[in-house]
Image (cartoon, rainbow, N blue to C red; front, side, top):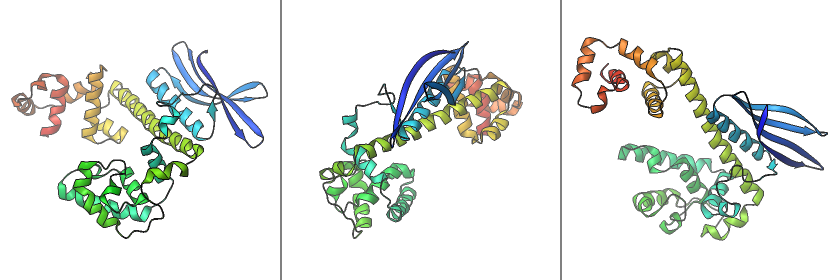
Length: 301
C-alpha cells in the first residue's frame, strides 16, 4: 500500500501518553483509511475505517473517524484537519450559547415549547422547524428570556421571528425560574472552558460527518441496486425509503451523470398504453425525458 496521507495523534491519559496515526493509502486503485496505534516503536492497524474504490465514501469515513477520535481526546500533530475556522472565531457568541445550552438539561421546559410549536405549525399550516428548530427551543428553555429584548439575544430570533412569535414565547416563559442574568454575553464565555467547547465542537462534527457517511453509503447501496436490476418497489423495500424520496434520489443521481437507465427501463416496461397516453398529455416539457416519463407513472397510479 502506498501511503498518501499520514498524521500522528496523541492523547495524555494520567501519566501515560497514547500515540496513534491516521492514514489514507492506495493500492492498485483501492483506497483505504484507518487508525493505527503506536506501541513500543511498532505499529499495528487497529481499525480500518474504509476500503474500496470510492474517494467520496473514503473522505466521509475518514472525517467521521477523525472526529470520533478527537472527541475521545486525541489531538493531531498536524492541526486543522477538521477546522473550517480558527479557534478564536469558534468562541463567538452564538456557538458559546449553543454549547452552554447543550450542556444543560431543560427537558420539561422544552416539552412545553414543543407543544406550543406543534399547535402553531398546525395553525399556520407550515412545518414545525419553520416556527423554531429544536436547537432554538433548547436555547429558549435553558436561557428563559422573559422580555422581547432578552429574546433577541437568543440565536435564531431576529426581528421578524421575534415580532411574529415573541409575545407567545414570553407568555410561556414568564414565571419560569432561572439562575442567570441578561445580557448573556457578560457571563457565558467565562462559564465554558476551552476543553468543554472543544469537546462540544468535536461532538457536532462527529454527528455531521456521521450523517455524511450514512448518505454516501445509502448512495452506494442505491447505485448497486440499480445496477443489479432491482425495481422501484424492491429498492423501496431494500433501502426502507419512501417512494417519493426514492424517486428524488434517483433523479439526483441522473443529474450527477450516473447510469440509472436499468430502473428507468423497468418502469417503462410496466407502463400501459392508457398510462402512456395520459403522460403524453401532460404539459411538462421535461416529460419527454425517459426518466421523467417513467417516474410520471407514479403520479397517475
